[in-house]
Image 1 (cartoon, rainbow, N blue to C red):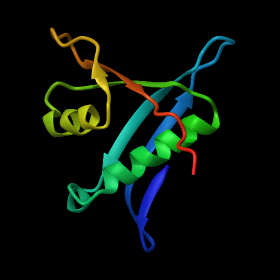
Image 2 (image 1 turned 30 degrees about the horizontal axis):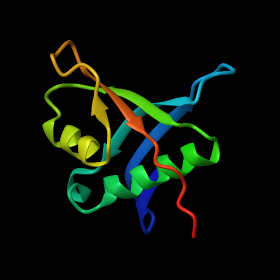
Image 3 (image 1 turned 90 degrees about the horizontal axis):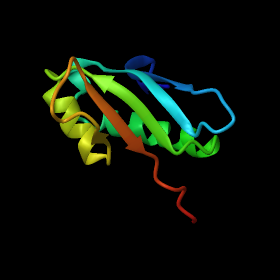
Length: 105
């Protein structure tokens, strides 16, 4: 998934649907937003696309890890509804991000 301003890529992320009959999960592999585009809504645009992608595939949860030093990113994920599964620490924070149900319009 990419976010662009004209022809310039200002953010990107990738997701992988986990395999198996009972899996309703996906893995958020990475999230990158260009420094000049942080705090401009770019990450929210990307997250909206993650949610739409998951809803289309009936995925209920995104899972991912993030280094503890990424406090601003963690604040963003938590604001979007993610939960840190290992708040006591560890090598990295492990997140569970429930995907909201598709809104009926």
